Image 1 (tube, rainbow, N blue to C red):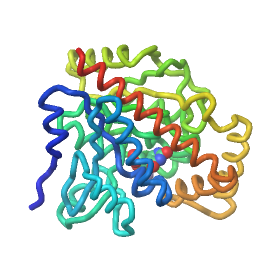
Image 2: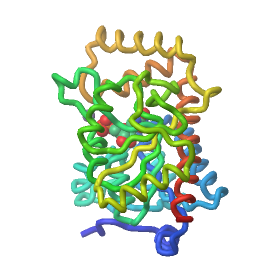
Image 3: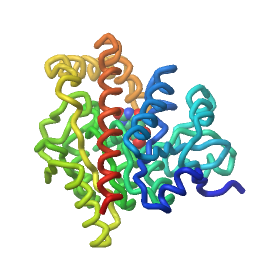
Length: 303
Ligand code: PSU
Ligand code: MN
C-alpha cells in the first residue's frame, strides 16, 4: 500500500523548525493552465517564495503517493501527462490504490498540506457554487473541505463564471472565516470587485495571521479564506469582463454545454474572446496570491 502522505525532507524540516512554508496546489498545473506555461508558472511560484525566504510545498499525486513538496522532476512529470487525473478529496483513495498521477484540487491540497503541518496555502481561485446549482447540485467540494480543515487559504475569490453570491452564502453556512485583504468586497478573480461585500477586512498579512491564530486558539475546525484581489493594473477591464462573460454564458446555452464540461468551455471561450488576456490575468492573480501567502506564513512563523 502506498503511504497516505509523503512529505519532502525540505518541507518536513521547515515545518519542524517553525520556518515559513506555503502549500501550492497542482490542479492549476495539470488542468488549469495550458502547456508549457503551466510549468513555467509553477516553477516561478516556487522561486518567488524561496526568494522571500519561504519554503514552497507544491502538493500532488505521483505514482499513487500523495506528496507534499513535489520535486522539480515530479512537477515536470505532472505538467506533461495526459494520464494525470484531477484529484479532489473523494478521488484520493482511487488514485492511491491504483498508483495514479494527479493534480490536487484546493480541497485535496488543503487536506494533505494540513496533515503535513502547513498553516498557509495559496491558490488562484477557489471552486464554488455553479450557476444553476439549485437544479444541478454542482458545488465544488472545496467549500465543504474548507469547513473541516484549519488552514489559511489565499484566493482571489471565485471566478465570475460561478454564482458568487451563493458561494459566499455557502461559506457562511460552512463556518469558513472570510477576510478581504485591503478590500470591502469579495474579489471576482479576473476583476477586483465581484460586487458582494466581505464580512471582515484586514489591512496586512500580520492581521490575517492574527485571525488564523485566533481561530486556532478557539479550536475552530474551519479554514480562514483570505480573499486577495488582483492588482488594479492587472485586472480585466470591467466592461470587457461583463461582455465576455455574458457572451460565454450565452454560448454555453446555445451549444448545450452542461455539467463538468461547463467550466473548461467557459474558460476557453473567455480566453479566446479576450485574445489570451484572461490567461495573463490568471497568472497575475496567482502570483499575487503566492506572494501574499508568503507574507502570511512569515508573519505566522514570527508569532
Ligand atoms: N478555479 C479556477 N481555476 C482552477 C480551479 C478552480 O479558477 O483551476 C481548480 C482548483 O484546483 C479547484 C478546482 O480546487 O478547480 C475545483 O474544481 P471543482 O469545481 O470540480 O471542485
Ligand atoms: Mn463540480
